[in-house]
Each structure stands twice: as C-alpha cells, then as structure tokens.
Length: 213
Image (cartoon, rainbow, N blue to C red; front, side):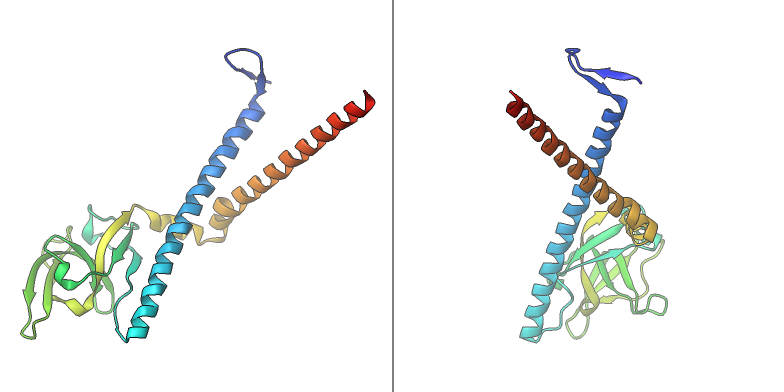
C-alpha cells in the first residue's frame, strides 16, 4: 500500500487514512453549509411570522416582510438566470426608484396571477395618486404592456443565489435527500462513535497496563 510521510519522516499515514480524513472534512463542510443555510432560512421565517402577526394584530394587509422565489423565466438574463433564487424585501412604494428590480403580481392577460420579477424603467402616478411602475425584463426587447400598481408590488430584490433552484429540486427528491443529507450525517455519526470507542479502548488498555505494573 502506498504510504504518505510527513516532512519529519516520523509518522506514516496510509492512503486509506488520508482518504478518510478528506472525506470527513468535506462531509463536515457540506453539513455546516447546509446548517448555516437552514439558520438563515429560520431567521427569515421568524421575521416573516413576527411581521405577519403584527400585521394581523394591526389589521393591515401587507405582503410578507421577506419572501423568496425561484426564477423560471429567462426574461431577466443575464442579471438573474433561470433556476436562480431571489430574496425580496417589502418596501415602501415611495422608496422604490428607477433601476430597482421588483417582484409583483402580474395583471395582464399573459402574466395574470403570476409573480413576475422585472426591473423598474419608469415611475408614474395614477389619477388616484397611486404610484405606477413601468417594468421591463432585462432580456426582453420591449417594456411590459401593463403598468404595475403599487398595491401589486411584493418587494424589491435584495439577494440572488445562483442556481439554488437546481439544488432545491435535487434535494426534494428521495435520492437527493439521502445522498446529500442522510448519508453525510450518518457518516459523521458513525465516525464519532468509532472515535469514542477507540478512546475508551485505549484508556482501558492504559488502565490495565498500570494495574499490571
């Protein structure tokens, strides 16, 4: 078996031990990344429910403070690509300006009832004093045919997470969940159990040696 030596040539580490080390390291990194993402999601959900309870208590009907979507249309390419995830934040319509990317409820015949994410290219006011936003997808040749009323705006895009939609889709499958979460977690648990057993056995051998002496 191929051997690996340190710079002092005092210790010999087998290829199997090297492989186990890197496998353990990358598994822990992957699980830490997933754990951090879950914490971020938990924080967003916590803010979401706190804001929701406040709105219910105050009798206000507002969109969620934070929300997230996965992009399924190429209309914003290359700024936002298909299968990218976006995080939006509810904004006061007065704070929105030309150039902002917003998510809103589509009202024209083609996009009716769908959540659209496009860029503001113009701002007008209705006869009632409501703000109206003219929008356009960065990848579209023409502006959207219908102005977006401020009441239909869900929020401004704060964050884009590239290709997260692919990961979400893969993790939603049985195979993906086992491969990316269950197996690494099981590996870490078994590794820790084996490590603890070795420590206990080593300690017992040392105690037995002391008794013999």
